[in-house]
Image (cartoon, rainbow, N blue to C red):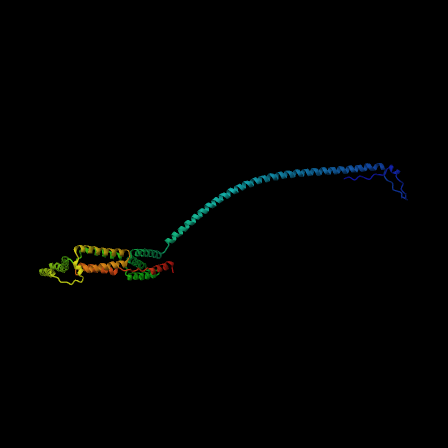
Length: 373
């Protein structure tokens, strides 16, 4: 801003109110009044020109700076746009890459899982193949003993268990391993216990009963003298036949002696005196004899079924009734009747309930040896 100079006093001031005057010193001589306003105007114009020039220079500089800033801003905006585009491109590529990596990772995880499973199976296979020979032997022996135990429980015979224990003892003896000595001692102990139990062999008893049933029709009754005489002659002729067979090689004298002995037996059989303990056995008619034999067969068949069903009390009762009928109505002096009675008594003596001992000692020893203790 330019300062306006104070107005100089002019002639109009003379009409003003009079001022009290005082003694004033005499002023110095001043320039002429006409020259003072023009000088101030020139100074003011120079100052204004200088200020205008400075303002123009400042405006021009400001405009140049603004243009430079605008160019810089445009350039930076363009760079920012290109960088944003590049960033978006890189983001898409990164997303695609991450998806591919995720897919590959899933595939690798699946393959790793499959490889782990295969490795586990392979380790199990190697472990099963790498088992020692002793462990295989113990496993085989244990399986065989358990199967034999089941067979013994089904059949009622101790023969399968005895046979399996003997085979196990022989197999353990072939290996001759100190680790298996305890198992072998347990096998020997169970084998002795099983043999000492005397278990009933149902199969053998049923075969013997079938043999007695087949002989019933051929056994002589006390009420049939013809059959009794023939049975006596047969019993007497048996040693004579043996002697006759031997006489062909020893000489003619032995032959005549055998013939004489057979003749004398026949003569003694013509007249026979015997004591009858059961008189009712002598009055059995042929029809009654048929039903007697059939009833005896039914008794023996019932005993056979009772043995097969493990009902030993019922079997003993039927066997006692059959033995009583055989002793009362059949000729006990005949060889076949005596043999049938002896066989029937043997069956009755063996038809008893005996539990088969369990091979617990062997199984415990096998479990201890398998555990490595």
